[in-house]
Amino acid sequence: MLQKIKETTSFIEKTIPFRPEVGIILGTGLGGLVNEITIHYELNYEKIPDFPVSTVDGHHGKLIFGILGGKKVVAMQGRFHFYEGYKMDDVIFPVRVLKLLGIKYLFISNASGGVNPDFEIGDLMIINDHINLLPNPLIGKHHPEFGVRFPDMEEVYSRELIKKAKIIAKQKGIMVREGVYTATTGPTFETPAEYKYFRIIGSDTVGMSTVPEAIAAHQMELSCFAISIITDLGVPGKIETITHEAVQEVASKAEEKMTIIMQELISLL
Image (spheres, rainbow, N blue to C red):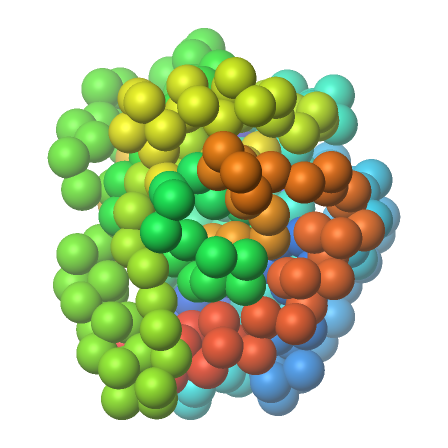
């Protein structure tokens, strides 16, 4: 796997003469942030050796290289999930590649289901911690090039970036929540009993992504910032039938606020 990561990185470096400082992973229905990027280059996943390919609606499958907030960024317009049948090595493969391309920061977005009774559909939640119910992506052969074997997980999500993001949100008049994201395998949405369980164990939202990427980024000592758009509610009395299409629709409506926060935060790096 290490050799494949290096070969993929080498291909991208030879194809795209652009060294990014910031990596961005765009979740379901959140690809519109690329409209704010001054794009220099685009590269379809299918053209990148050994790179996974997005199979989910709302994930376009491109690397976008350009300028956002005055910084050089590479945005993944489409991510990979364990439920697609990918191994964890594949799920975090792009994060490893982005690190070798030169990024120092990783910004992650997702759509998630709120289990905190104070949340409403369309809210933004800055992730300050997580509960991982997926296989740990660091299981398997250890590659010292990517960091220590047993990373401390006390601060996966940068407190400094969270603090700055909250200040930006206040200045822009954007209400943000803050809380714990729980990652599950999917692809089913949760049952009412599961929603109740996730709340009991300390969750504020639940989704099917983000955590493996954040763990890999943290091991490689990347400063990580992650934000969720609450697209449905798993709160007793507020649970309704949910579809992937509905999740995309809510996410797309709320992403303008997320984009403002991310763009302003990147400009402060």
